[in-house]
Image (cartoon, rainbow over all chains, first blue to last red; front, side):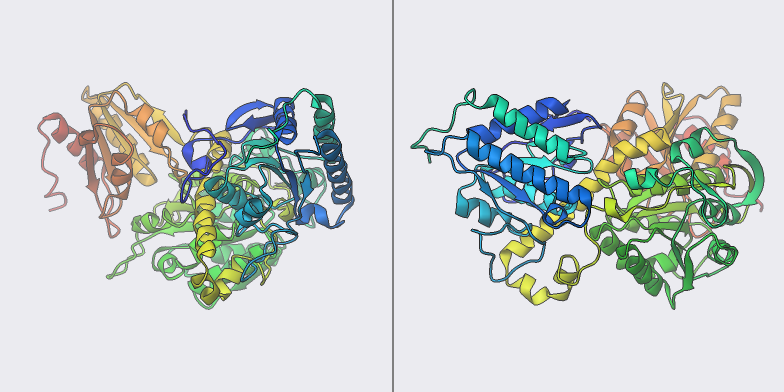
Length: 208
Length: 403
């Protein structure tokens, strides 16, 4: 199916469609996607790094699959994510950019509402995005179903640029997605951030 | 996938070798065997590394559930038990799948309808349960003969829905079905349907894969959702309807959740095309008249097409293999030259014709019929007569057949 639909930052709609229903297909192994177009994995990693470097509040949302050391791979990934976060912090302009690391510890709906300063929840991820003025984020270690819920709600109601680092098949509801994520791929993304440091314009200091 | 790959080459307790599924289905030698459709289900399940089968074995429609009980006795299925009703069976299947088991069950007709509440729940909970549906009449007066009306309900549940024509389809698709439905980007239940009685009770030659090969076990760690947790959706949201009703954002989550289920149906397209060699099969699509059919209506249409060919009337055929995902683009392409599209069906409402009608341009080309239902057979002659009528060729009346 050919489609002119592109997965772009919102706010898109009261209830935006799933990208899959609009004809966006997931990448095959070795590939990624940018805005729904299939690209090489390397291109997707580079674009993700560019988005982190050009955002005012680049943020990583680690999920339950990497927040607990339930196996060696999870522990390794968690260290890689911490390394990516530290790298982003080092590489952005601290006078106008503020990197964040906000966990999605579980998927329970929390009423009356979550504390958006310390966590994000898949049932209302927009609250955390709005509260912290996050304009670029990456999901990693979140179960695919919950990640897709979050990505679509974020696209529907915010202007945040979304990146998905997925351990399985990738996420067409994100603007950039890499599949079969490993600790090495997360470190590779950190390497791209370092490599592109200084070559990507930071956001204007007085921009909203 | 890595966890499943690690099993390949090892043996299970029945000395079957966990085999690369692609090799098993496409390259391993096949043995021709003469079986009923019900026996074929048993043989497929024998090779499917099922953890649990839950049965409500209403034998008149299909012996499959009882035959799978024999498999349990022989040690090929991890566990097997009987529910008190079809609703109970499907609820128990959900529990088993929530817990990370590969689950198999069968149903038909009124049983499908009785259990219907469970199917959107399965899909919403992303449970890759496989359910064989040996379709039969659902309305009073009841019939154990084929009638595909129940498929039209299943198509709206968020499940994958495939419609087998022959016992060979059935055998292959049961095994391939697990491969598609357990993909992490799909992870949905599969309703694998056939026209009961015709397929289940008649014997046919079926090429079986080696009995000493079986699928690698299900890997629940590839699931897109965590195992059942009373504090997480969907269970939390089913448990706390009052909270949901008071909170707008829960509605947004619920809506996104439904969209995600249907997105997963769409994602199954890629995997299904790979395993099934396309969502449709086609023959002679350059003909002016094309029959679009699914299930045993395909077999009857083939006979009709052969009869017409002898009279110099060329007719093409589209065999619809999957109903969810719906092969809209494929049907549009296959019928683009057709002046007339005939859609024969074993049900009273013509759900396949409606689906095709919503798919193609110039849908006045569609002739919804012939229809039979309630267990009637569909002689090829009535399909041929429908085609002749459409073409303005005189056809003898079939109303007096047997009289």
